[in-house]
Image (cartoon, rainbow, N blue to C red):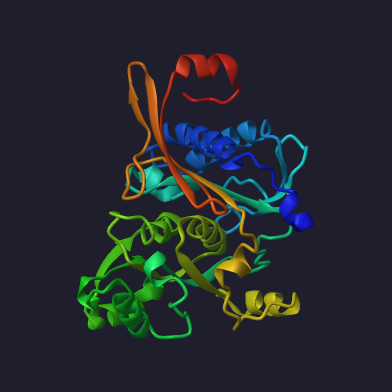
Length: 332
């Protein structure tokens, strides 16, 4: 066993991490539909940070959410956890879909992933990347250097289906107009999502979620998180850094990044033992959101570990009166 591998404990840290995503989802859900995405994100960040402090790990946030849109954030290089071994890298998005939450729309989730220290990709100044993701059937067959039409044919063949049977997930952005046109011309079905491409990528590997492949440009934090999730789920993802402007391109090149390089799943998360947890904030294709009744709140989560390939569904009920007594988190 390598020194790096020995730093990860035998216990399933994802089962502890899910407490952070549950707390973030519960806190954020109080802001659902209130039109204040920063309020929702701030509540989620505060809740996640508070719970994460109690987890037995020496974590450093390698990639966090917030810099891209000046929202509240768990900042890069922030120390997370109780400070005891194992030393780990952390990728986090307290809400993947802040706008979805603020508008009361479906598909918002809270996510966190960890892997041994030094194994998570740091994109430097680049906050966006081009991505392609798929489920286990087409693992190792997709290629971001090929056209969408060619990749659709590969995925259809791997699944024993026709291209017209496939459903493609694409972020609904103006920059994807040509991509959407090509996919339509190829005959595949399209699910346009307003936000939340971590969940979008994960649906390609989730049986019954109704998606086969994801294309398009989205955030680099979401790319690393999706890579960790798909590594646990047996899926695949490739990325390529996508500078927004000349200044970002020059900064990336000065920092030594190869902007033409294809980033594989192992480039994004260079460990076979990563942990991932996600909890639904609002109802979606992947997870049910937080629901309230007179006795408290219910949550729906996925808890995964790549080493074992185990994917657990955790459905929990939370007695908010007791949580308020024993936690400093504001659950509303």
